[in-house]
Image 1: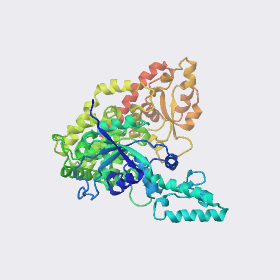
Image 2: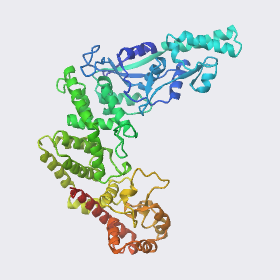
Image 3: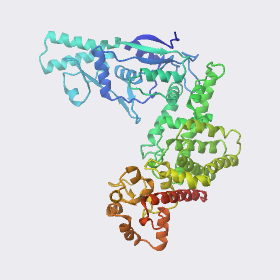
Length: 584
C-alpha cells in the first residue's frame, strides 16, 4: 500500500477564519487576485444556508522551522503553518463577508462585498440600491457577525413593523431564519492537508486531480504565493506595476505603454533570470524556500538571503528608467504593436538579457540597446523561446557563466545571432517558413518589422507603414488591411479554392483599407496599372522591393508567384535586420 501524503482535518468556518486572522493559515491579500464575481459569493452563502457541501479545501504544510516568529528583518510577518493550494476564492469570500473586509480585484481596485438576505424566504442577493430601501431585506449581512449584530437585527424588525403589521409568530420565524444565517459560523468544512515533504510538482498534480475545473498550477503560482507570505510588499509592487502597464495615468511617471503589458508571473521570470540566472522556476522555487538541494533541509537564514537577492533583482526589473529604455529597444527592433509580437517569452527573456547586460556587465546604453534590439528580432523570428522556453533560456543563461566583461557579453550575443542567421537560413529555411497561412507567423511579423525598419510605405501608398501601425490610432476601420494580391474571387475562377493556398502569406500585402475596397476582386493585371500611375520610377522600384513583387508577377502562374515572393520576402526581412546593424 502506497504512503498517504495527506491527512483529513475537520474545521468550522469560525476556527478556519480565526486561523487566517492569527496567521496560521496563509491567506495573503493578493495571494491571487480575487476573481470571483459577487454573484458567486452570494451563491456560496446560499449553498451553506441550505446545508449543501461547498467542497474540499487543499492546504500544504510549509515545513519551515520558524512558525510563530517573525520570519526575517524584511517583513516581520508571521509564518503561516499552512498555505492554501485550493480554496483561495472560497476562503477569501467567507473572510471578506463575515469579517467585513475589502477584497482586491484584478485591476487593483478595492471593494467590500455586500450580500443581502431576506429572512422571509431565505433568499440571498448582491446588495443594491433597491434592496437597501426595501425593509424586507437585511441589505448587508456582514455586521451580523460583529458586535453590531444585535442592533442590525433590531433595526430590521423596527423597519418592518413600520412598513406593515408583524405578528409574533412571523417575528419568531424571521428571527429563527436570521439565527440560522448567523450560525453559518459553525458550518462544517473539510480540508486535506498535504505533508511538507511533498514537492511542488506533486502538489500541482494533486490539485488538478481533485479540482473539478481541471485548473492547473504552475511554478509561478507557488513562487507568487511564497512572495505573498514572506514578502507581501514585493508581491503588491509587482501586481501594481503590471496593472499600471495597462492603465494610462496623469499622475507622474508610470510603466504604461502599448507594447509590453506583462502579468506578474511574467515579470517574475525576468527577476528570477536576473537574480539567480535561472529560467526553470522549479529551481528558483526550491531556492526561495531556503531548501538545501543536498541535505533537503530548510534554512531560515538561507531563505532570507535568497529573498534579498530577489528583492534586489525585482527592484531593477521594475525600475522605470530600465523599463522605458527597454520599450525603446522593442521600437528599435521594428515592432510597433503588441499584436505583432508572436512570443511573450521573446520579450521577457530579451528584457532579462538587457538587464543582465546593464547591471552585471556594465554595457554602455547605446551598445546595449543595439544588441538587444538585434537579439529581440532574432529570437522573435526564429521562435527561439517558443518550444520549451525555460530549457532554452536556462542554456542561454548558463552560457554567460564564463563571461566577465561588457565586450565578452556583447560578442557572445552577436555570435549566437550569427550562428542562427546563416546563408542557408536566409535562402532556404526562412522562405520555407513563409509557406504558411498563419497570420500569427513569426516570419510574417518579422516582415512587418522589417518594413518599419526600412521606412517602407504601404502598398503603393504615400503613407508609411510605421505610421499606419501606430497603436494610438483608433479608427472605425483598421488603417491597414491584408490585401490578397491575387484576390479570392479571381483565384476561384482559376479553380483555386483551398483556403490553405488562397491565404498564403506570400499572397498578402499591407494596403490602406480604401485601396483594398477599390481593388475588390479585380485581378492584378487590371488594378496594378492604376496603382503604378501613382509612382515615379524610383518610387516604383522601392515599392517592388518593399512588397517583394517579382518581375512580371501579374502574369505568373500563381504557385510560381508564391515561391518567388517567399524568397523575396525573406530578403526584405534580411535587409531590415541588416538595417539594425547600421544604427549608430
